[in-house]
Amino acid sequence: MVPQHVPVMVKESVTALNIRPHGRYVDGTLGGGGHAEAILEAAEGTRLLGIDLDGDALDAATVRLSSYGDRVSLVRANFGDVRSIVHDHIGSLVDGIFLDLGLSSMQLDTGERGFSFRREAQLDMRFDSRQRATAHEVVNRYSVESLSDVIARLGEEPRARRIAREIVANRPIRTTTQLAEVVRRATGRPARGRIHPATRTFQAIRMEVNREMDNLTRGLEGAIEVLNAGGRLAVISYHSLEDRLVKQKLRAESSDCICPPGLPQCVCGHKASLRLVNRRVIRPSIDEVQANPRARSARMRVAERI
Ligand SMILES: C[S@@+](CC[C@H](N)C(=O)[O-])C[C@H]1O[C@@H](n2cnc3c(N)ncnc32)[C@H](O)[C@@H]1O
Image 1 (cartoon, helix red, strand yellow):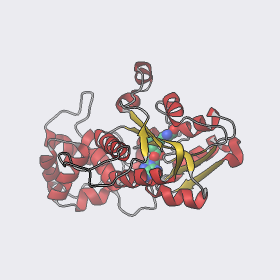
Image 2: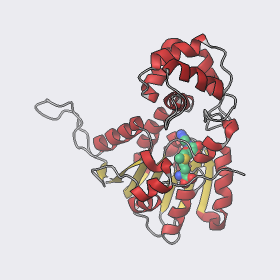
Image 3: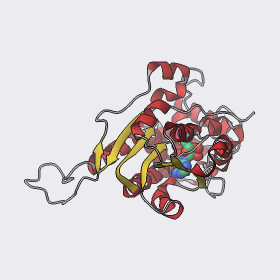
Image 4: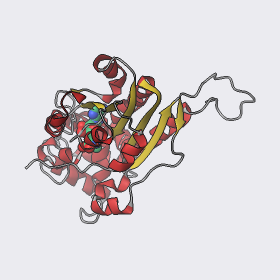
């Protein structure tokens, strides 16, 4: 059976996007199409452009959204290119852009994709199977320094250096479970317990393989450029690094001055292009976290184009 993905903070997302009848919306991380369907249901005649890099996600969403006919178009592409995608597929500005970052349960639970340390598989972890670089290259070709940097920066793993050395000493590493065991040994922590010792390392390698921070940076830039005045950008992150990036970008773009602190007067000439809709981050309810533990780390930020 194909694993299902339970979408996170659906009601909050629809409210955040302030969906208008006949508006045009972009879901940059379509996945199984749960949020996309909620956007299409939220008001009469909304149109949706759904983007995902993952062919399996697009297949699942195509089936789920088939009853909406020509209100929906789906493209296999990178949301980092949202500006040109909107230009090519819509040809005008849009009323809302939604991003629900990271990977879906469908991807995590499909063992052969290599995202999970709990399932034996080749080291893959690509969102897009057309891409050449896989987790195998990162694990088996990066220098100790580069690996250590990836694991420390993207995994926020305090034992990154030791883990990187252990990985290099045990090459070649071919499978997820081999990698998980090497990391576990390096951390000296048992595999039992709530959080497996390889969790942060797997997350870091996945983010490196898929260039997730770069794509997010480009996606936020592009999204701001293709939003109509009054259009909303809503982003759900599950990782503190991503949330920080979103927070800083939305803060900077909602400010009339981005000069370094301490200058006697503004020299940057920056003009705000956004208004923050919520000063504080939006978190899922306790009930949602109880029903769907994956929602636990979700944080949503919302801004409006001015
Ligand atoms: C958390 S899931 C989204 C789930 C979706 N909201 C739903 O309701 O099913 C994230 C999705 O974003 C996709 N993705 C990640 N980075 C991407 C990128 N740069 N461009 C396009 N899709 C991306 C992944 O393949 C995955 O399907």
